[in-house]
Length: 306
Image (tube, rainbow, N blue to C red; front, side, top):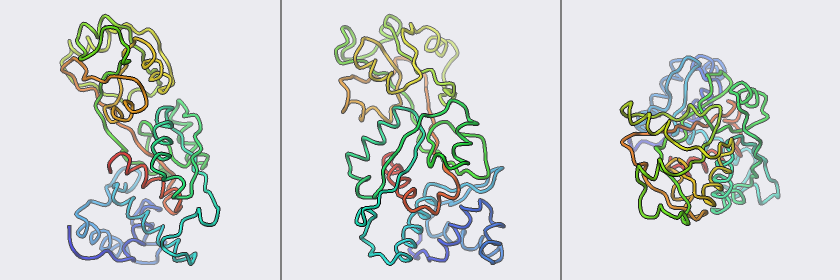
């Protein structure tokens, strides 16, 4: 990373590119040449040693660092324009900004619990409102387009010119059982896997989970489970598992958090397979200029280690 400092005008250009999702459109909006836009973005790349933008069929896609830089720019400009001291927050004026998030029930719990624990909601002057996560991509996309939802977290949606998306986290999986399970105590064996009942999350978009391994083992993992309960609620599934003798699969990313809130033991899956899940964060392009939504972006990125 270069020691050269980032210039404010470069961040202004980045903000325009993220909002327009196009170098040409950003140049027209700022009344500059496309080469000036490209020069500023390349300069940011050199200073940060980060790609900043990648290309897709629907336009340019920002990296996590680009979103963070834009968030800082929006916050700085808001403070300047409002004549606020740099240490002030919205809570000083008593104003609380509502951010609407649509995601899975466990993500609702994890996000709200984590942000309440670290004091971020009060500090940043925002409140979170969660609404049910639709089952279809079309409903999720429409909610974002119509600004009914500020942030959507789930499987990757089809490309849309009005929506920005980035991969929030990737995680392989583990198995969770109750601490009071009568036979599974210190390890989880293949026999345990086959002889005990399981609870399963039955989302229509469960395609976010991929499995890699030899065909015989994959078949063993997928098809030779005694599924006792199917549920569309991820939080309900976890509570059922913690209070019964069932086994369930969870993302490794959340293992430590779950052990702090539930009486459970967590083990590696007893098969030579990689069960992997990806989760994406989506938002309307205009949200890039909303200081409060950008604050929530920053806090969520911190939670996942970005």
